[in-house]
Image (cartoon, rainbow, N blue to C red; front, side, top):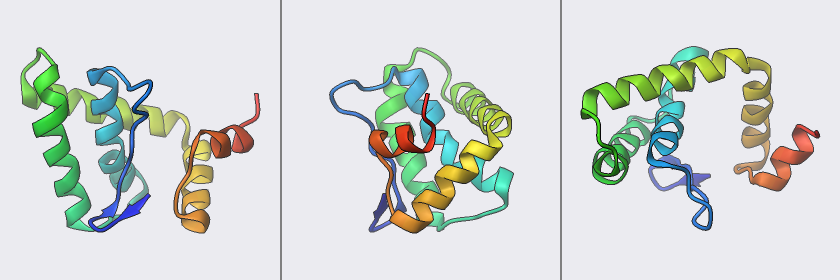
Length: 110
């Protein structure tokens, strides 16, 4: 969703991802910017870095720089392997401003 600092991701509060998954999601925005050459505001990257450093990494038992690097590479590999789906999600976000689970299920029926 588009927040005051640019696009933001809200994780499910009821079923939150494990810290390692949350870090991959956190780094996904940066990986997508690099993969698709579609830079957003520098504030969005700073917000992601702050969230990682002050919320997610505290719950991981790994070296911070190693965990962030690994999460970025995992996010990038996932995006590369699912490039067409990532483009569909991006197009939906451009049109609607946000996406939720119901919209994802409509875009990608099982």
